[in-house]
Amino acid sequence: MISSIDRITVAAKDLLSAKKTFDCFFDTSPSYEVIEENLGYRSLIYNFENIQFELLSTLNTKNNNELENFFIKNTIGGLYGFSLVAENKEFLDKTLISPPINVKESIGNESLNFISGNLNQSENFKLSLNYYDTPLSRSENISDLFALDHLVVTTNDGDKIVNLYKEKLGVRLALDQLVEEWGGRMLFFRTGHSTIEVIDNKVPGEDVFWGLAWKTKDIESTCERLSQNNINVSEVRKGRKKDTLVATVKFDEIKIPTLLVEHLNRA
Picture 1 (cartoon, rainbow, N blue to C red):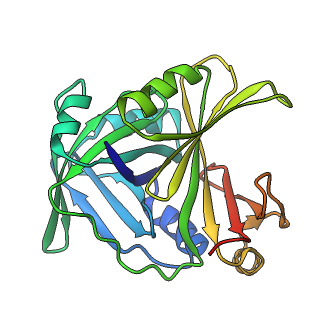
Picture 2 (cartoon, rainbow, N blue to C red):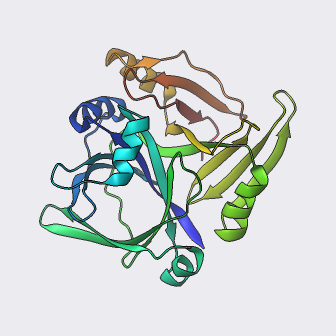
C-alpha cells in the first residue's frame, strides 16, 4: 500500500536561478542539498508538512540520460515527476515491473538510503515508488505555504488511472465525477493528507503532470508577500470547493501552473 506522496520534483537547468525563484515563493531556503554521484544528479530539498519539494539538476561529472532527455523537451525545466512512499518493501517488489535501484543521497557528512522504481505512467513525467528502511522525518517549515493541497495530472483515460492508483497502488478514490460544463471526468485520490487530482479531458497523448496547489493559512497575506517580491499573483477569489479562497501564481521562467488555497473551515 501507499502511505503518502513523497516528493514533488521540478527539474531546473539553472539550479541557482530556480532556487532564487522558489526561495522567494516559499519565503524560506532549502532544508538541505543532495548529491547522488552514481545517478548523476544534485538537488535542493524544501520540507513541508506532507511532502518534500525537490529542485533537481544534473551533475557535471556524470550524465543522467533521463534528465538530459527531459531538458531536450523542456529547455528551462518544469514538472519532472513525483514519487509515492510504499509502506513496505514487499509491496514495492510486487508492484514494480522492472527491478528497483538503490539510491544513496549524500547530505553533507550523512546519507539517505532508499529503494526506488519507476511506475511508467507516462513518457511526459516520472512517477516513482520509493521505500525507506527508516521513517522519513520532516524538519520544521517556517513558510506560510505550509503543505501541498493537491497536484494535478491530466489524462485521456480515466479508467487506466483508476486501475493504476486505486487497484494497483491502493490509493483511496475519494471522488469520481463527470463535469458537465466541460464534458470531462474528475478523479480525486487521497493519501497522506494530500490529493492527486486527475482530469480526464480526452485530449490525445500521454498523461501530463500539469500543476500544483499549495495550502496557506492566510491567502491575503501570502499574496501580498508574493506581490512585494515581484511574483505574479492574481487577486483572491472564491474557490470551486466550498469554503475555500484561491489565487493563481505565474512564474516568469519555469512554467508551472500554481494555485494557492486557503481552507476557511479548517479545524
